Length: 79
Image (cartoon, rainbow, N blue to C red):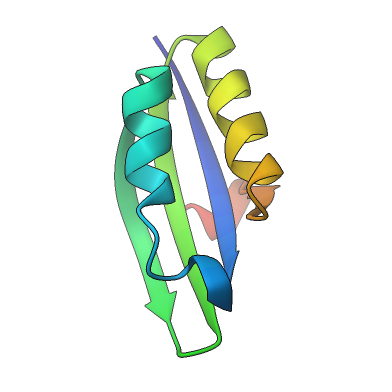
């Protein structure tokens, strides 16, 4: 099992959609919310994801295709 830390930024049209849940179910990844901030116009979540490398890659590609900005989180941003 691999892990990945990512920052997901959701546009306003996706804030109320369960895209993180859908990604977890469709691609068998386990999300652990480390930080979250939601306003009426944007949502941001820092997640630690666990799963197989292939499922993590497919899940993140899928969520990006939906319109979510996906950025890797490394170094001191994790702590």
